[in-house]
Image (cartoon, rainbow over all chains, first blue to last red; front, side):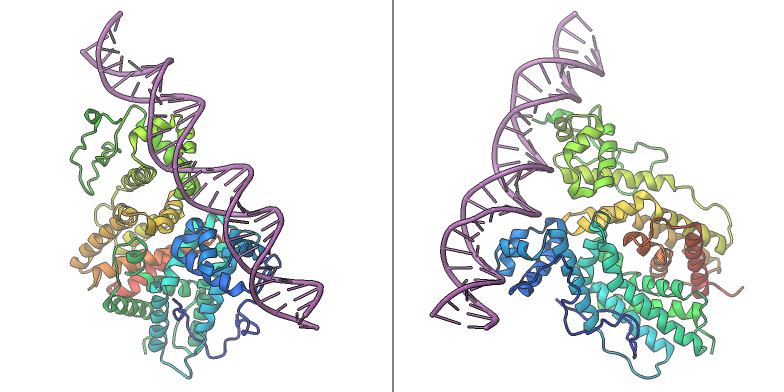
Length: 231
Length: 231
DNA sequence: GCGAATCTGAACCGATCAGTTCAGATATTA
DNA sequence: TAATATCTGAACTGATCGGTTCAGATTCGC
């Protein structure tokens, strides 16, 4: 269920390292009350939400899955939306933390880009990545704060990492980029070419390893063609 | 009861034919019956579905909006899903047809690419494009055939057009592309850089004209850097 | 062991919603 | 105008679901 999150590993993760990264439930709202079985509930909720989506997931199902009474759930969360928000937040933290491993030392540009692209594609393929994306996009408009929450702890983080890394390479004269934000967005988008639509629109049951390679190398080749320095 | 005599025989406009100025309701299923107020219903349904999404749209609302009784709706469509599928199909046809004006004659590659990118971005920004994407992605997994249907009449068409045009330019020696499918996907993805996430995750209320230009030119520059021939 | 906090489970409320039914009104056609 | 096809509207079914309530069971801290 929990796949390694996709992000460019940065040696010293200055920005957006979650403070006191120990406690996963640190970001709990004031409105959320904890109790003995809080984690059970969160686990059950995650499973059911990811399986059924937000709207179709029933609180009774969640209670059953969590092995907890419905009353307990409503003792923790004031409503279903906040429960989902909590699950999303918590799961994003977990994903991010799981990918804290870093690449050390000086890596050639092409290698770094390839690794980054691979991770992003892996994330797109992951069960969590797909289903969460579906839910956030589908419900986002009617669900205040959801889109933002997801972005900040998911794609937003990746974006920042990419910008940071690209910046380093630019300073070393190994890339030539004027608009770092755009370049990062382009990189992330390119990774989706050839795989995202297949998955999102149910065009293919599985994505083969070849598909992944094609996408990754396509991304790197294109990115370097545009921003690489002829060495 | 549904009188079999009134069953509408579908004119054999099968897949992917876009009769110039033809009947918009041509692609009606066998299971769908027409009547005097068919178009009213389709219009009302489109409005409500796009406003509320599939799940949250109520059939009573649609009936009210269409100025038609609920019984009439269920005389046309066997269920809500087929009604939505019909709306989606019909609307995609309309959109596609509206953009049928093709790039005529010999246009420099850069110009052609720019125009294409502009159109794609415009579509992404459109109300229909956004909302439809949300619905299809959100409901796709639980809605047999929806993803495919949408893809075939939307992104899939664009993809085909791109492949076709790129192929022409390659033959003329004005582009150098080995994997046309990948290149088309990359092009379409690049157009989304900088705009799609902002919209999807509610990061920005409006997309400025600058944003559009930035995305379009970013796309064209990158694409040509990779696949252009040094002239 | 005792009191306090927490959890249970099942019933219950109010609301929504897809889909049906049908007698009667309305439009179409010829 | 008469026969036919279409539409109406309102009531109804059956089901789901979010959220509440509470008396009693369970667990925890001390």
